[in-house]
Structures are given as C-alpha cells and as structure tokens.
Length: 200
Image (spheres, rainbow, N blue to C red):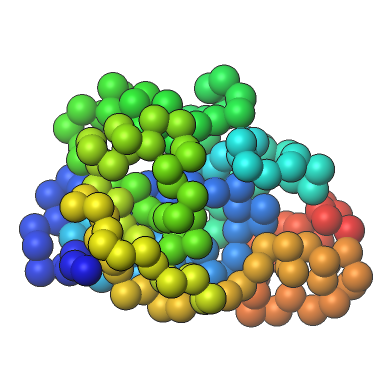
C-alpha cells in the first residue's frame, strides 16, 4: 500500500472530498486540511452533495444552508475550497458525473477522489465504478472499525490520515437535545446553527 507524500511536486493536483456535510464538523476540517498539506495535493475541494444515492433525505439540512456553513468553516484557508456544482446537476448525484463535469470545466487540473476506508468495499456498486478505478487516482483514508481489502487496485493509495470518529448524526442528536457540541463544531458553525435554529 502506497501513501502519497508532500515531497512530490504539488502542481495542480486537486483532491475532491464529497459529502453531505450535515453539518460540517471538526473531523471534516482536520481531514481536509491534512490531505491538503501532508500529501501531494495542491488543494482539497469540498463537494456538497444535495442528495446521496445511498442516504435518505429526511434529516438533511437545506443545501444552501449547508453551503453557507461550509463557507464559514473554511474561511481563511487558501488550501480548501467549497463547490456547489452538484446543486445544479440531476439528482441523485453520482460521483462519476460530477468528475466528468469538473474535468470538462477544469481541464488543467488533475482530480483525485478522496474516500474513507468504509466506502471502498462498496465502490464496485457505484455508477461507472470501472471508469473511476481506471481514470482517477483514489486516496483512501482510514476509518475506525474498517479494514481495507487487499490487494488494492493500482490507482488506489492509502493515506495515513488521523483516525477520526466524529459523527454528524451524533452532533445533530446533541443539538436536538440541547447538549454541548463544543469542539465538535467550529465556533462559527455552531453560532450560525444556533442562530438559525438548525437541527433543533
């Protein structure tokens, strides 16, 4: 298993971190910043998914509200960027379609798919999984309780990122029950959530 390092020239290799970010929390931010600064990636772009093909929509905050929270959370970090590209695409959104659209819009970039180890075993059932594995590098970061399959496909690389187990579901429950979420959320994100009454 190989791990890309920051010794390689940064160039314009951009990592794509997909998620509902419902809400964005410190685990997301630690991971995104680590990948942007400890690997050969020049930047990490956070792609907000309006609707996941594998998740129910019941407890999903409005997409514009989630975009605003992510924008607040990453303000001042030049290595992180947020995209709402999937908001304008057909729903449900599929990773390969978003990658195709990004490659068309930014032909000068080399895009790398960032994925948790818990998602890797399910990759074969993703839309056009064969194309994902053939056309894109995939950087996999560990997730608690999940072992990576072996051998890994040639374009899949393991990044020894910090092992984080912060759950957005747990955070939403704490917010509903009036419990503290200090240090689980960036302060600016918590302030906005409480001001707007999100998840309460």
